[in-house]
Each structure stands twice: as C-alpha cells, then as structure tokens.
Image (tube, rainbow over all chains, first blue to last red; front, side, top):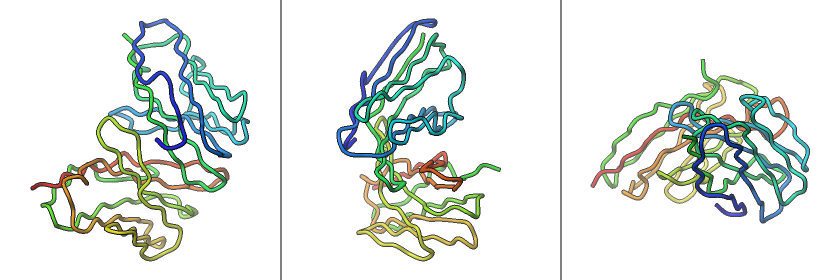
Amino acid sequence: DAGVIQSPRHEVTEMGQEVTLRCKPISGHDYLFWYRQTMMRGLELLIYFNNNVPIDDSGMPEDRFSAKMPNASFSTLKIQPSEPRDSAVYFCAIAPRTDTQYFGPGTRLTVL
Amino acid sequence: QKEVEQNSGPLSVPEGAIASLNCTYSDRGSQSFFWYRQYSGKSPELIMFIYSNGDKEDGRFTAQLNKASQYVSLLIRDSQPSDSATYLCAVNIGGGGNKLTFGTGTQLKVEL
C-alpha cells in the first residue's frame, strides 16, 4: 500500500447510481494505473496515465467508465451509471520511471 | 492463448519445503518480469523483478528467467505458513509504456 491512498475503501451502491473512486499518490511517480480485479477475470488494466496524460484506455470496458488525472496527486475513476457486473475490487497503482508498479489498498465496489 | 499463463492451483507444500511457481508468456519481445504476492483481501505486493536470463535471489526467494523458453519461475525456500497467498506473475510485453500484463495467479498453501 506504500505511496497510494484510495477512497473509499468500500462502496455499496444501487444499480444506476454514479460511483466515483479516488486515488491519491503520496510519493513521486511518473505513471498511474487503474485496475479492476474479479475472481472470474483476474487483474485487468483499465487505463494508465503518464505525467497526468492518459496513455492507454483500451481496457476501459464501456463508455460508462471514465478516468481523470487533473494533477500529479489525484486521480478519479467514475462509473455512470453503475451496473451489478461492475462489482469488483478497483486498484490504483503507481510507478516511477521504471515499470515497477506499487499498488494502493483498493476499493471494494458492490453494485446491488 | 493467454498472454501470461499460470496454473491456478492450489499448490500445496509442507512447511520447510521448496515451493515452485511457474509462469509462461507469449510475447518474445517481453523485457521485464515481476512476481507479486497477494494475501486474501489485500492488494498485490511486489516480491521480485527480473530482467536478465538466469537466477536472481533475494532472501528465501529466487526468480528464474528463461527467455528462450518463455518462462519465468519463483522458488520459495523453507516455505512458511505465512507464505500462503496467491502469487501473480506480471510481464511487460512491450509495445512501449510501462504496461504490465498479469497472469491469473497461483494459489499457494503451505501446510503445517
């Protein structure tokens, strides 16, 4: 969990609601990644940023998902509207100039 | 064929034995390889990375890389019950950027 704060840690919401997940890197980094983990599909990369610029969003499942990184210390992942199949653990990870990634504690999302 | 493949397990070993975890990857251009440990309900934690063919040792852990055969392995010597976790193999399959592709993980159980 070193270097990354994620909030909320747990989120329970109803289908159709908007969900916003937050990530705050504490230490220096050049890259920030959003992942989703489920039992069925494992750990999937959704999107990643380099110096606050989105580089690859090919893993974002649908237009319902969007991510922003307005500055080096903050990123959000938004799901609107949420669906039960979005239930998963969402991780934010950071990396310095190398490709070694360090994960935050994750947000467990449940969509009813 | 999946880009990074691991046997899901569970792999059961007795306490004190050597645990051997294997991973194969499909892209011959892959340059860097990582092993993460994930305890149930926690985030992935980096254990080791390896870039060159051969062995790399860190305490009880040894990573082995064979680029010709496209496999990477993790050996855990003197296995302890606290090593019981899921071990994720990750590969930077190239194409630019610091994007890692993860295997689905191998569950290790170290039995008393």
